[in-house]
Amino acid sequence: MDNKYAKHEKDYIKVYQDKGYTSNFYFKNNKLINSETKEEYFPQDILIVAEHRYEGMSDPSDMSILYIISTSKDEKGTFLMAYGPTADMDISEFFNEIPKANITNDENINENDSSH
View 1: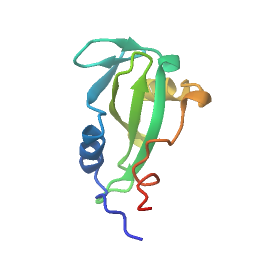
View 2: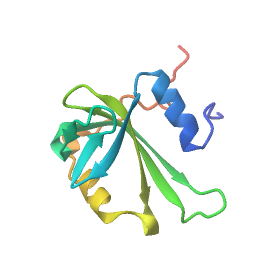
View 3: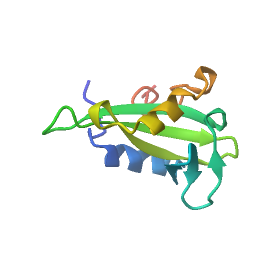
């Protein structure tokens, strides 16, 4: 079965934005910050509801993860993180500290797009 979504991060971001995940976050001082509201979050404040991993088309070592997240203050959005050789270790550590109970795949568009 072909995936109807393209294999580029921006295509997934658009689909999730259409589903209400419109906030953008950035990482600073060991916190995830909403770029619009400036709300700050620690790992325990983050719920990952889906993730998508990518390898670069021209360079397979160019890898990234798109996290679809919801926060303790009901802000929903996306965060794109490099991983592999180009990963920022502080960001990686932040996401590794998110409690396992806060990680689901409930909103994954690839797994929840059923036609029945």
